[in-house]
Image (cartoon, rainbow, N blue to C red; front, side, top):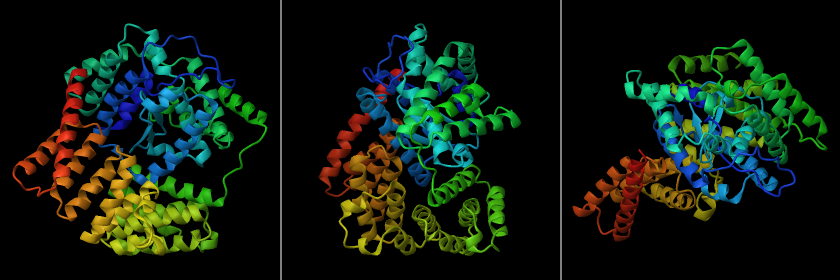
Length: 520
């Protein structure tokens, strides 16, 4: 199942931007468009959960922690600005998921779904020139959420029940994965028939532009990124009008909108500074990562490696941020192609280049740890991920405050080093998951760490939690059933606390699965 076809249909249906309410009493807020809202924030979250369950199962969905940290860093700044401006109301803040999903797709697209879910295609990250342009797209989508555009349209079309909308989307999903799914095609046809009812109005698009610009600049990003992104996407659509840019399809970019953003930028009392060389180089490296991850075929990996090797004759002082990105992509591609010598050579050349750039140097250390792990060298990975003083002396709680990508790579490296390391990894991951229980990848790494220590029951329970975090309650119930079978057979030892947790969580997941079946 591919996300690109689904997103294209979602964007056409007008469901690619979601819900949120205008703050009352905020002098900076724009007036509402006059729609009475009948859908509660809780109902929107349920609708979003139902759609996202299917997206998690898609082969195009990916959880790349390095890119995820980058996007989430921008996303969290925008959310904080929306709170300050009164756009993000407390009930939305509390009830929505506020989760970012990455899609392995080369199209230039971002989308939002009911319940505060945000999706970003890797093609968007690969295409933008800097964080300001990426922030402009995310701010626009966030503003569709905070202005509750889907809820307003559902209320306007009173005959269309929210669960009917979800059924349409699920039908499109089935039709995308199997052309022979007759029932899904029928539902997809129904969805197309109501496209006109669900399309965003021009007023809502203008509202998302205005609010998004305010949120973006409040967050400290340069508002010029809004205008330059519009111009870039408009140019791309002009030369590549093949349906590959769904962002353009649902967000009609006109010279008026570009002019509006430029005028707003001129009225800004202060302008955020343009990113420095460090941030530009770090962004170029991450954009290159998105580019190779979006198409990780052998041919594409070989092309990325060849392109990086072509610039190998340049001295470090002659390398630009773009060329550093190409070398980053080549090193990653070499690792995937099982060519550690080529990967190490490119990595070392980049290391000489980024010594004066902390952000870029951090990204390069993460890449080096990935390359070491792919070669089975956990010690080298740990040396790159942990400052020397922290390897044994620092409290585990402090280590748990690492960025997500660093934390997860460190857990993999520790687990690779043996039982003692696996125990340290499990301890840090448990602290991490206490605050982030929806981190499916962390749960899976905890399962691996427990298995490495011979703690079978805890490994199976963590695996069940990984499925539950991605809303796959049927799979989670199966793993809990396996855990309960271990307990009955006495194969789990005397871990009575873990057995009690398994029993309680199994009942909770059963209840969630029954609710899920009632929805269907």
